[in-house]
Length: 473
Image (cartoon, rainbow, N blue to C red; front, side, top):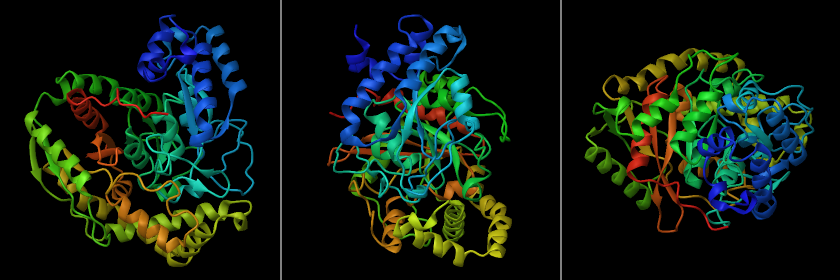
């Protein structure tokens, strides 16, 4: 078998690739060459990567083999793409901007943990400038396209990561999520995207990005792969939650046992948080309804119930805008940014004073407690993943910030509030719309409840497997 040209090998997933490397069936160098070849063949039309580190990846693969660590490495020889807001030693994190950035002196904690587990970074993926909007198009790096339909966006802000994984250019990629930025690309690209609980994965060297809204995670094609990646990334300096075996939870769910042996109490909601205007497209509503019926057939108790959002969307918006303004102020050349970026930063700086910033953080526990009260009665909340399938490839790039913000809010009304509460939430594939693009649902758990989400998600995946579906490149 020539793994460089074997598409089934490229789409076999993180868990299988690592198992084959550990078994000696294939070397890390062969795995790296397979994915570098796919990047060279397909990324010119997708634009998922800002940089590809081919020589470094080859050298790291050879060092991994020579170092004798393969037998114990959970991600042995697995190539991974890194989002452009996570520090990688010797490279720049540009945040999708033309503003000059310094070379990172060391890996982010999460990247270091991936490397220690045997993963091999192969490049950095494109993002919208400062990770603001749910599409991936910038003046600095151009438009990133969805492999299911190149006229559509892979979402954002982890859009390059989503496009790269969906196209099989890498088996997995890192992401960050401050208002849905892992879950949105996963939903657009037919992937599994987990936003971990606040405190589960270290964001160091960044200190509480976006005032604690943002956390790091990964995008993958299956529940098992997502669980393994989170298991590796979780923990270390800068975290407050204990280590857990998420892989065990996913395996139990896939077998229909273990963590989901008892019927779960599941709330289903389409309610839009007050202050957000939008509607659910018919295809997305059908995807939610199909999931609801499936969960009932699997023996779970499913009811309609809504979180007590109150005015949380207003608090979230102010926090988000202030986070953008703080990122903007840290740039070496803020004047080189896009017009909409400058507009969003201007609003954030003037709308949210230092005093208001402190008030938002002080009030967050009360707001979170009100929303979290739903989980006194239920184990999991399920919402639509997005209001519709993927937007046009350029999104609202180049438009006034008010227009872009309105489009973003209508497109992603259910993701951001759970960044405010810090709860774990993931999006799962839920079939395809009439336009041939992926549909999605979102699962939201209690604080620290990733294992329950993985068990339930794996049960859904085992009943209606989606990983064999691939875009035609």
